[in-house]
Length: 231
Image (cartoon, rainbow, N blue to C red; front, top):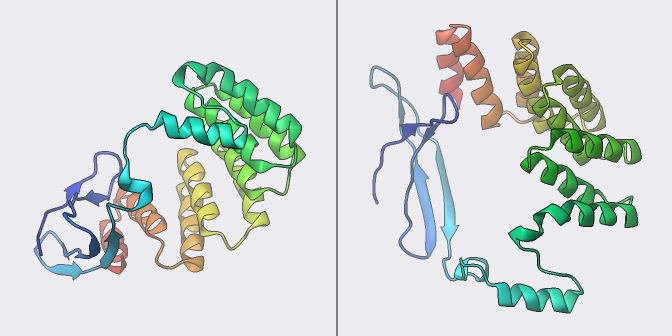
């Protein structure tokens, strides 16, 4: 076995990361030893994974355009390159028009606009999608995300509440709501949302980290430590 030290994440407060290279195929087990500032052990969570570098999906890690061309020819589709990106929105819009009840092309269209930082078009696509398919949890989540990215936090909160009404037992929906509430400086409501997520899924790390961050931000260090010990 080997040992490595985790380092604080530069992207997320309260998160520690470590990289481990698996040298061969097989099952791998990892145990993290967590200690407090005094060196006292506070937990030893265990996880693992299976590694198979010869599996079909990982055997080739380079662009195989010839294969893509064959698949496109077989399926009646086409291969798109980076130079085709401007026309992709039009293709997806045609797919939406041809299959208005299909969620997938609507989600792809919204994601495309977000990735190209066209929030105005993303908002229009998301609002149209929800208007046509109001009972789609995926589209409601996408609309809430666009509203949040656009800075329309009150509308994002309202949308996430609709999402929760649609699927009340989804812990992720409550976490999304908490993120919008935190951005809107309503940290008390965010804490309630995160606790609701943990009621549904007690081991949800994303919700636990959210509560720790809120506690540290409020300088409730003992409370943050107490939550961290349960992780």
